[in-house]
Image (cartoon, rainbow, N blue to C red; front, side, top):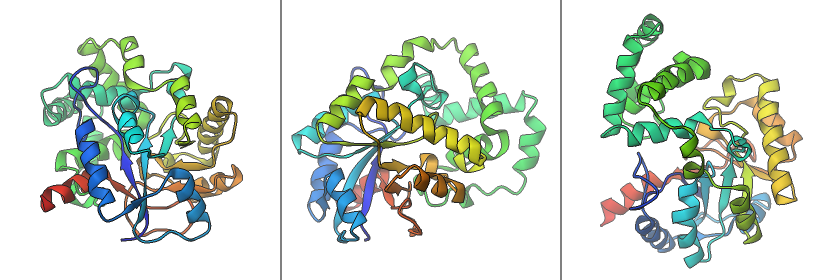
Length: 311
């Protein structure tokens, strides 16, 4: 297997952080690190960057990466990383650091905490579509849609996952999706302000990670789910603000990044070059290394599946 990163997002515990779709516990992360170390070498982020730029990475060398600057990562995963003295990549989107309640994570929290399971949420979401002005547009766009063919690189997605993401990203788009979801939040009486400190890490947390030798990278400002659909000016705005805010926190310019939701295009690559980013990561293992901004990443869910098969 080619050199790659392992990608993490959500973690849960028995107190502050609820179990969400795809989340893992501290114990599971600990076991996963031991499993990976059995036949792979986990490099520090700095060493990975150096060897990648020198084209000296070996097939058994991997690194770890954490997307979306989530508070659960800092509270649950960070202590495990310290236990193994692992320095990793943290890819940060910056709008929450300005106090903005970015809807991506709020919607995830909502569909996890307010519903018995994810399929219950999907059932209600699809019902809202049926009662909305989007009904006929969505119905027409789904004619001939085959869930298994959409996002096929993410084998752990269910048919409902794929259908939901197709409606969100390809049919509704960000504005209409937000309108629909905000209507649901209002109906369910969700207290948005109470979620700010629960969901994201702070500037002080980011400084601590940086000072302890971890590598902080770009992940856009507002985390659009399909940045490839944005024109060059909007993409530039996303990454320039992301760069500016992180540079002010770190006292240095980030030189690495990861693509939110694996979305990017030629304009994105051109922009990253202009920002002097040295290396970037995709969100799957597809062999698509046409630039230094397309290094592969294995989702931790696939590692769990491998662990279970060998247990």
